[in-house]
Amino acid sequence: MPPPDPTHAYLKSRGSPAHVVAGGLAGLLDRWQQVVDKVSSGYDLTFDDYLNDMDLRQLIQDTLPHASSRGLKQATTRLYQLDESLRPHLRPTRACIWGPKPEMEYRWTPQRSWWYFAVPKHPKPPLTDELAKIH
Image (cartoon, rainbow, N blue to C red; front, side):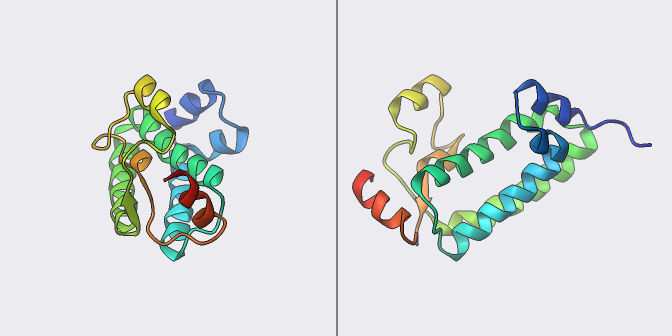
């Protein structure tokens, strides 16, 4: 039997839902792949959905330090590939998509937390309409 994945314990300590805990870091990366695919094909959900999807990317970032050495190497390789396939489909924003208060509180920067400083280049409704109002 393989040793327990330490990311499960971390996710549980954060209060993540049971299905997120059960999936561990690999499950988070699978979900990130789905987000990358959605953005690449024209994001057709709401701005709130997009915020949640970018929070998923932050959760992955927060979980990485809790991975085993082997798991970390595999995860960072996959994450890099996913991020690199996503970046061409995003355009930078002037400000954090969550606004200035969370940006300051969590010390997010465009260099360190780039996912909070970009939106899809080719969104579809309803995101198109919402972005026109806020960005």
